[in-house]
Amino acid sequence: MHGVGHHVGMGFVLQSYWLARGSAGGAGMNNRLRELRAEHEWSQARLGEELGVSRQTVNAIETGKYDPSLPLAFRIARVFSLPIESIFSGE
Image 1 (cartoon, helix red, strand yellow):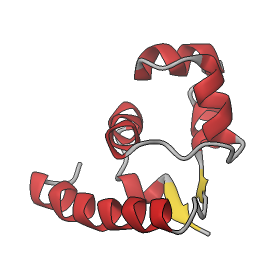
Image 2 (cartoon, rainbow, N blue to C red; image 1 turned 120 degrees about the vertical axis):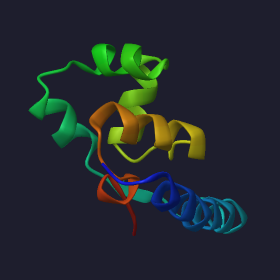
Image 3 (tube, rainbow, N blue to C red; image 1 turned 135 degrees about the vertical axis):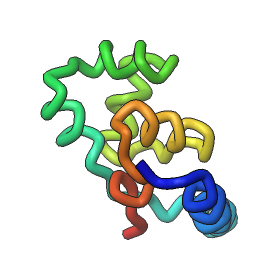
Image 4 (cartoon, one colour; image 1 turned 90 degrees about the vertical axis):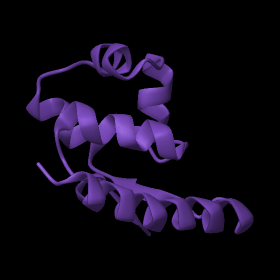
């Protein structure tokens, strides 16, 4: 597991991405959410429960129709015990 400093530094990088994405009209992100969920044998509903969001939100993130907020992206990283940058990448 990475130290707090790593997550704080990565937070600034991701926050910059999220801000730029918002001002650019939502460029979209790639993610490994479906793959990670399958590895855990979790349904979208189960992952939604773990994250405190709806199954529809999980589906929208997986299909690229919705980019998660920065706090939600960090919750996703914590649920899978992975660095956030190993789950999300820009297009």
